[in-house]
Length: 344
Image 1 (cartoon, rainbow, N blue to C red):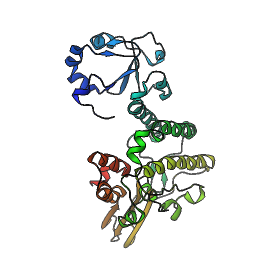
Image 2: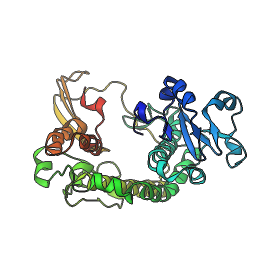
Image 3: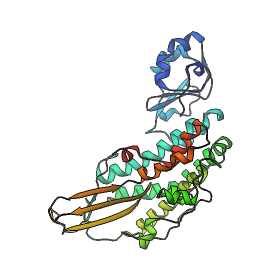
Image 4: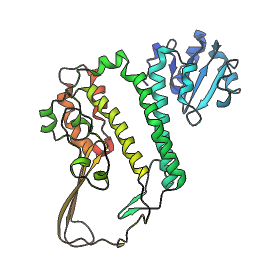
């Protein structure tokens, strides 16, 4: 969601909570009327006004918050619900079209992201800091609750992608900002050693899951989406298609989940022989590699991590040349860097 300027507060339908509190007197003085379908973002939830409602009534109505169960009760002045209880499809009943892109995209992405975090929480008890994979296997066998939730999630993906198509792909403003902008040619992508969706959007068929076939990837049937000219639009489309391919891989894994132990017998202390080794995997942002040098002790003599975000970000300069300053935000976003991975 974009940050609105103070001069826009009265007319803009989406008002961040901090800007409301800082400018509340100004809003009350203007006698702002919140029309049907108008929304105000409040920390982790959204308020939807379903009938004419003056900002001066804000404090009174705050004490009369309606629950998510009464979402469709149009007689209530204000509907109040959290992301935890919201079904994004309910938004179609209240949102004005002029605020559709800003609000619906944010809520649907949060809703989709929440489903993934819920699965993490079930499998290992942690949402943001998942710690399930171990050297030699995984911490414990997957519960039935997790398997059921994963299947429901995979079933939801096609509908989710259709929703994203409605919000973004067919939006004229979105297309104008994305198509033909910040082009990374095949030659430029190779010169910068890019990887992941960024290099595939430039037409380079490079996916470590297909090349090395590590783990069980050799047993899965999936396609590698490729772009044509390497612009912002191609990077967006490639990522959308990769979500579908990832769902296909998960479905195959669920259908062919083997029985048996989930953890191999691994020494508590690893003492590799002298030498060096490099291993890579296909990260969501590209090639994630680990180069380790051993001197024969239990501690590595040298370790270097190939961070795909750091490598891919090198192309930002050439992507922004000849563009407007505002376009740098789009270029940066389509590279999709994880900044903690860059600055480490």
